[in-house]
Image (cartoon, helix red, strand yellow):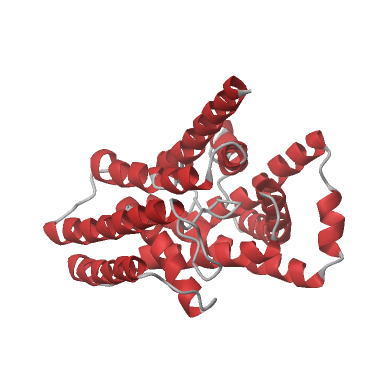
Length: 316
């Protein structure tokens, strides 16, 4: 039994590394889809993601949730909100990467745990411990420093962080599995996305049929790029502790940051290094506090200590 448990744990870790590794390396993929614009890429992602996850659900014969969801208008309404919010998140991220803002996009996912905590306090009236307050304060200071460094507020980072934190908050109330949630959300996105692609094609602006078979295949593969990491994440989530997933989630923005600086050659003046340093300090405080809290009995008044990636971590 112990050997089996260790084997499952290793499989879980491998899947976790695979999921966050793919999310971290995805900035290499979106530029391959040029000359398609960000909105066209986004629309293809919605359409092909639905085909991919629908096929996966057909294979495993897991459709009972769909009927239940359709009979619950409130949950269905929340799925519509989740679909709208993740549309904003996906679109901003694709545009940011293809416009040379990979580093700023990575910042959004570094500060996402801090934004999640802040929303928990403001919306859910959750209580924070002193170290958590300190982490949020350091995070706010980081945003101010980065505002000086960029000469403007880091709007891309803030948009990505707040949209994904909102997505997580809504999904917590929907309570659907990752693949099922992606299927429901892309089903809602499908008709508007398809209508846009047809309109774009009718006006001569679509690249799907005009840039060759390779380009068309890459656009179609956006469904695989969206769903495959999610499948790996689901396999990891049932095999490794949530605290481990909470640490693994930082792999994606670390990879994105390194790609932005090293591969894409984006500038990092001293002010930006200082701002990122403060963000990383806030995350160290948050993580250390979470580990310390995990070692002692919890009370019902305490906030979940490591903000976890929502069950459908499909932000990038």
